[in-house]
Image (cartoon, rainbow, N blue to C red; front, side, top):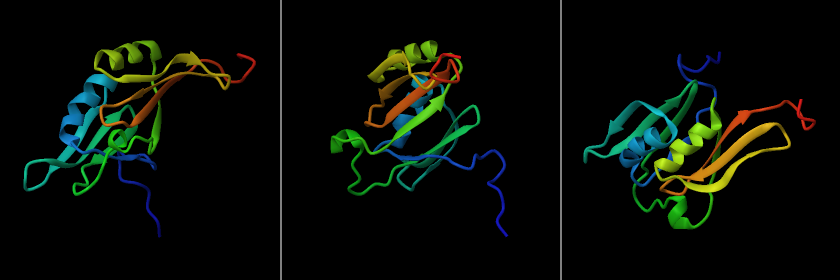
Amino acid sequence: MATPPPLGYPRLSPYLNYEDTGAMLGWLARAFGLVERESQRGPDGKVVHAEMQLEEAVVMMGSPGGDYQNPLRLGQVTQSLYIYVDDLDAHYQRARAAGAETIEEPATQAYGDRRYGVRDPEGHHWYFATRVHTDASGE
């Protein structure tokens, strides 16, 4: 019989690979307000697995080592995340102050979200949104 996810974990948790997960922990906290839940280090002292949280969302991450190349090195987007926040414009200013590269300025979308997009230092795309209306009519 199947059991639900462990307490404190949503049913879906994206897992990002980074060349330097340890360096990204501090950057993601400064830029996006994510809070480190845990990190595990390998024999060499480098972070091999970590978990960060924003409200009920959990993002897992790790360093696969070997010949792994992040999206920045590959020169292509390999995925993107979409996260709801309470104050989009303040969140955007925080991300920019931390050095996030803008790929999409804050704008209201026809489907009802105001969102922006940025690229982190290793090339992953992050989109943040606030719901501003429920349908294309603006209501």
